[in-house]
Length: 266
Image 1 (cartoon, one colour):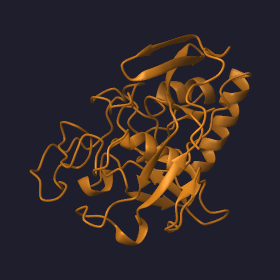
Image 2 (image 1 turned 60 degrees about the horizontal axis):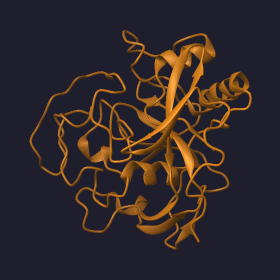
Image 3 (image 1 turned 90 degrees about the horizontal axis):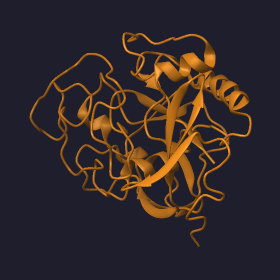
Image 4 (image 1 turned 120 degrees about the vertical axis):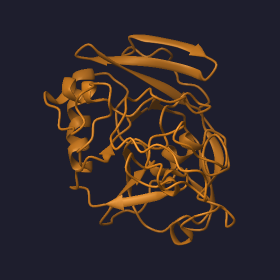
């Protein structure tokens, strides 16, 4: 059974703005005068992982299996900006710090937990900010799509920020920006989420391991492990790594100029 199609109550007390548009329900919170828009992701069922005929798939780690998301949740429409991280933590660790609207990077999974703790203290009766589960992340990234990217089967540097010298599936080469770009630089996916493909890797809550082949309901990953999941690809990587199904993982204390985060809640 799929439950919770809408948030209740709406709007919650912590929202400073809210509404409904062609993508669905949205609201925003503020910390230190910095606003973050969140989108309501409705429950549903999807095929997580990649089909056997998807070009450049990582067969050992992308076993396709049915996943049911029974509860709706809030997800930030962008990766966390340097401006928001600064408002919460009082400092900016990012390498590419010329524009506060660039995504924060050089943050480890462990540092993200400290950020979330501080943000939730400042919001008090807020949405319970956290990292999305890996299943929630891929479900939102796909936005109802079934191919390698939310817009279809091909990829260009006019759609995402990655190393265009290494295109996907023998596609044409494109620009290599050699840095991050502001979080609203490209068109959003069909659910109103920006840059789920490229720019910075986004930490997920889960430990990383091979998928079980059986259908799953609200999966949260293994109970323990050595690496936390990263999703979405980044500004320096090849097109293959931007696919909706691609999953990467590193130790939770790693920090470099490729790793950022996207907030979830509810």
